[in-house]
Length: 115
Length: 109
Image (cartoon, each protein chain N blue to C red):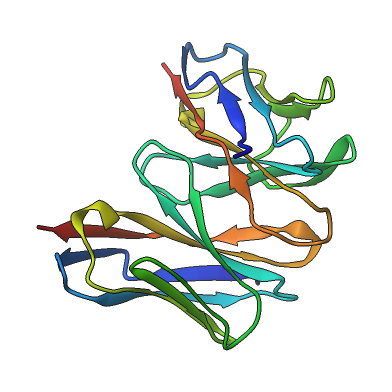
């Protein structure tokens, strides 16, 4: 069964360091998302991405964050200068059809710990 | 404002004790309502999609139903392995998904 894969599964970094989280969405999916979940809290939307550009972003997704699709398969989330409050699980998700609806398929997540 | 509210926040059941989880929503242009199961430290695992009021979906001990304002996830004769957090999400316009805070279910043997 096709799946969304994320790396790394866990990253520990020092405050102020840059972090890149990587995702390989399901191959025929067109719409991609990053969500985060702080421990014990709800899943929060960060950004959606379609046709090689940001479709929508939340208030959380400030200038410290960026997304890229550097090639036909990878989808990355970069945090330029991490803060303690960036510690969370980051989930990549995708849907097959833009505008056609359908359930989000999630990866297993990348746990980011900022010290 | 589009939003999703789940209740209760936590639910403790004895094995075999049936119950229901609630998801109420307000969203403009509902395109679908989704239930997910999330185990600790894992990504949400898709369970059901419901598209229109009156629709029902079943999978093993779980049944999801949908009205115009809310959805229920009914758990019949739960087992300890059903313990998890159950998330509700709705899809609105422009492929935006809104998540509830989840219901943490604990089923004791």
